[in-house]
Length: 91
Image (cartoon, rainbow, N blue to C red):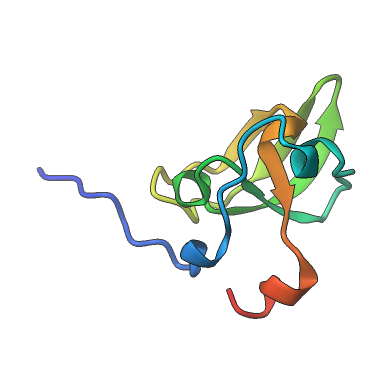
């Protein structure tokens, strides 16, 4: 049984990679319901919705939108980039 990475359902190539701990990643305040992406490689996780913040981690529901079909993941906020409103409608 061959498993190939699935094609993302969003146009993730429009999201620019942002290195962890970059100023844009550090200055973001994330709130529940906000749409974000994994900054270093947007295509890995896809686009997700912030569920909650616990201690030093943010729980995000990616709903399997990326190459790795990740659903729920707890990540450090330095890796998450909010999706700008001007880009959201293009995706």
